[in-house]
Length: 309
Image (cartoon, rainbow, N blue to C red; front, top):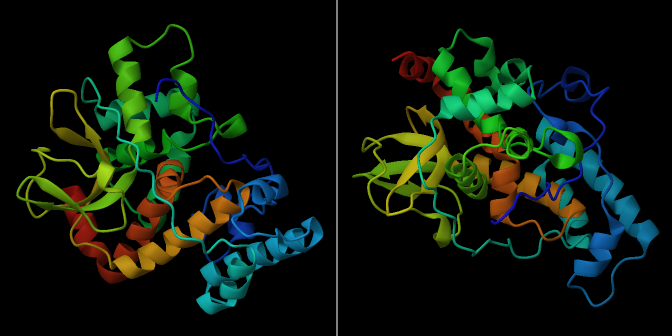
């Protein structure tokens, strides 16, 4: 990626958004809780169907999707309620994957640097990030390093105007970062996060991921570890795990895939070019939060013990 681009996803009006009111069943939600109308021009241009829906019919179905999307997340409607709407909007086309190779980084950047960069651009990131990334764990007395990891995750989220991330804004401000740091930040941004099982120094993705994104070589992570992070390749070989959050056991993959599939459908309404990996890059906090919510329900004490250690 030779230069930074703005998010593929339009930023909704958030000045009056309050997840406690908009999503009472999910008070840790972010701007995915805000209703955002689909782009008909995107639909008409990229739809594979021979005859696109008329605009009025498309828009009515899109409004229905947004209502059902929240109902499914809130547990008041079954997953099957979305099926006919998703089919009518052709959101159930084969899941796209990004097959482009990743950009290697010239150096490792600690998560503390990423978190500090986010805080420079969004001073209240320390309040936003734990909720958005850790879910219910944000209300617990967790170590500074875990809150720092949450800040690192949100450094790459489209938090600012026109879908700009804190890191993307930072690299364009003066004084400029050294070239090596800017290149490293671009490499991290280009790498999608994943739930990983570490096996003898190698990483095995536990969720769908393009084979181009699976690193090889030693990553300096202990075997047997379960972690979420961006496996960023290094120039000269190897990789490291940026925005790393460890878990004691791997969450069940089925509910995570379903949650991420919902997010992919939501984003592809807005831009049909969005791939599975784009969704992971731009909405990384959804993956982290879904994994944390599963962990909270199944063994919160084990997670807190691991993080305290």
